[in-house]
Image 1 (cartoon, rainbow, N blue to C red):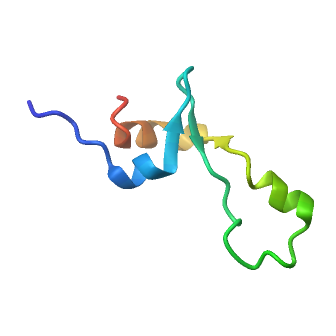
Image 2 (image 1 turned 45 degrees about the vertical axis):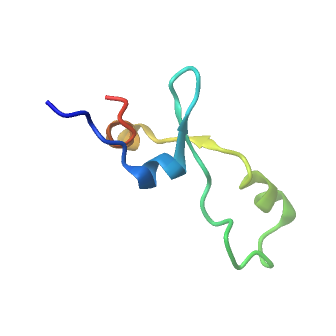
Image 3 (image 1 turned 120 degrees about the vertical axis):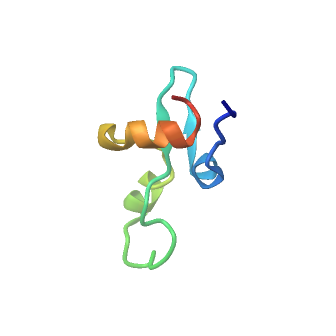
Length: 65
């Protein structure tokens, strides 16, 4: 059976931590930033863990399962 290929679009958007969590960037940081508070924009910088409902699908795209 051939090797599984990593979905390159997913590979650019997600990263896997040492403990195996899948991390993603937060949305709403790209444009229309003038009306957003500095605190809100600052919090967009941090990564967050992928939701449980999406975990299996993303893991498969990254070639983890």
